[in-house]
Image 1 (tube, rainbow, N blue to C red):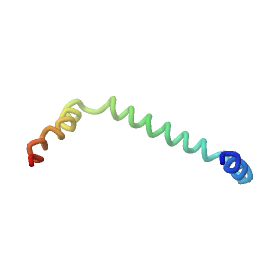
Image 2: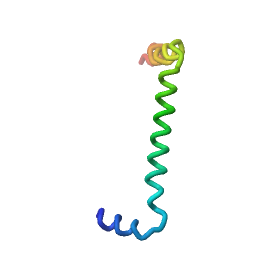
Image 3: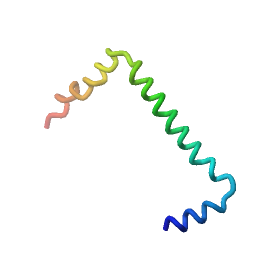
Image 4: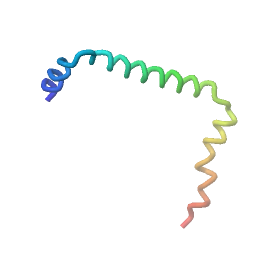
Length: 61
């Protein structure tokens, strides 16, 4: 199966740029995500982490 896909994709001109673009998008997304995590305010993190605990009493059956 892989030989069929590889052989078919080798015939397409300009296809070699797409793996590089996807790698750059992946890398940029996680760099931005790590930056946001390390610069997030502690009170916002505390508020968001307590959201599941606030709704615990609403789901009683």
